[in-house]
Length: 344
Image (cartoon, rainbow, N blue to C red; front, side, top):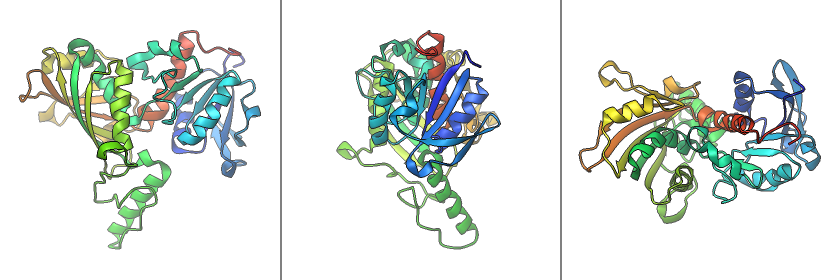
């Protein structure tokens, strides 16, 4: 498709990079040319895309010549070095790392929530939010517009794949060992044994006893919803699930809102599926969300301890909507708004 977009996928061999390849094809993104970039240790490997095999190329400035769009999923340190290089070469960069999320000149975008901020991408870099933040704000945006959020208390139950391939390997090998009646091997990615366990300290420690993951949810939620007054109190934990993050969310609003109103607002919201029939067992679960791009919301009920409060249970595929799909949706919005063009 010569009229399509010329893409470089950075971090092509990682779990998110692999999912980005899949999502680009599923969503029929218009591609004129594509290349795959990664660190030196991955150079020479082959990746499959659209029935063809492509060599993985090294990250170097010349690799971004005649590239319109970069989809990047690398550690933050790599992103801080290479995303500006790609942007200076003329590409728009959709960056999945934490490096640029709180930069005031970089939009932090969930397309269903704040796509309008894409016009502010002065650096030609757009940040993809943290996976746990993405699904929460998709669920809360229509409720916030209706009744204005005062305070959020959220507990997450995050899947092993949030730690990438090594996290999944940890879980699988530990489960296999337990089934054999053997002692599980020491974890490679997680802070402690995950199989048969819940790990509440699986992220780097930040300020005031909160993990960096918890601080991401606080700061990113405010930036995405455009309201610095929203109070956010998070607790994150890793659970022995392969794919799909779950969140128990308690929300206090400034104005009245009933569970019935919330259900109707969410049914009309883009990217949301309401599953809220407890008696029939129709509730969001990771096993239902895996492989899907929507955010599932259920267990919608009144909080009797505050004047205007609701409890929600929210689930999404952390590799898709929590990372790869959201990045591709950002690229689609850039196209739709005329910001991303061949040779732009």
